[in-house]
Image: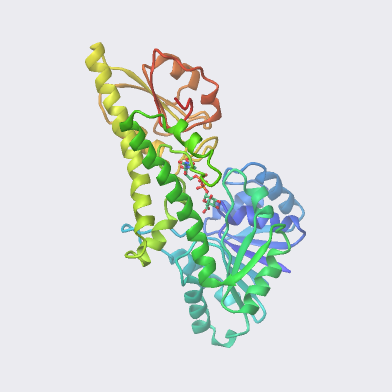
Length: 400
Ligand code: SAJ
């Protein structure tokens, strides 16, 4: 079997490497020649624990090769980004161009699978496109959708152990796609149709977004009511059927803050809760920035001098070095617009940053008057609560 991955990013690359680990020949395609070059040297262009070793092994054994152009294969996977346009409308142009790129290489008996998060109906659209351009392949190839659901930072484990939902455009396609996933997935493989599989991915992330919005809404209420939201949630969760997530500085990353819009954009009247959850989670970051600015003003009024403020954390979630779509970064930028104030920016998971000058977390905690915890990194939890500081614990480091 020869497997081809179109897109070698955060999901495509680890999946390709894990498939090659099973002794299967894998051809990876990325539009960026630097990415292909890096991989062919046994190195990686993204950060994921343990991944480089697996890529290196595949390349050294001659099982995994990367290039900028597709080849003939038995299974073709589309694993490219699906961002949204200015008005939160999903942009499936990368899926379309990936499909156009493999089109000339498709042959009878092949399996074509989309993994990219996609609006409902995308797989059927791509099937139409394929059969329009290559009518001789009608009913001769298998077409399916199978969303990824791995957690950044734990990708290699979850790729193998998570259950997968697989939906073909017909039963035969579902079965063929399952055959492929069985080569490396130890979790269960659940069959459905393509539309349900597409919606399933969007549902998973919208569900998490809505649950985080609930926690964030509680944090607004508790702030006004003088209640410790962390204690409240801990106590409410003692109920056998209640399981509330944690409030934070907002929702970041490339999935949870994006995917719900794919539902809202197509079904705006029906998706009021999903849409409101997005609004609440976006508002949370703004609220944190405003709270920090107010604390700075109050300090100045009380002490007759401008405070030094420590911005603790820039990553989009705890214990990772990924700053993309990070609410913490947004808050830092907003707060630091206030001129003539002193800031110490901390992010223990990265060495340096092109915009922010970074300070060691202990030094910042010691020197600053106001401490704004934006991410609950493990390092921060080793600090001792200091009553002399103004501590804005948005991320629940001390939970006080
Ligand atoms: N967050 C909170 N409170 C919480 C949990 C998370 O504020 O209680 C925040 C985080 O700080 C972060 C954001 O939510 O800013 C998202 O983090 P996450 O850990 O919930 O999720 P991601 O974006 O790293 O990965 C998600 C996962 N989806 C679900 O858990 C339903 C992952 O399984 C998906 O594969 C991934 O999205 C994806 O690629 O779609």
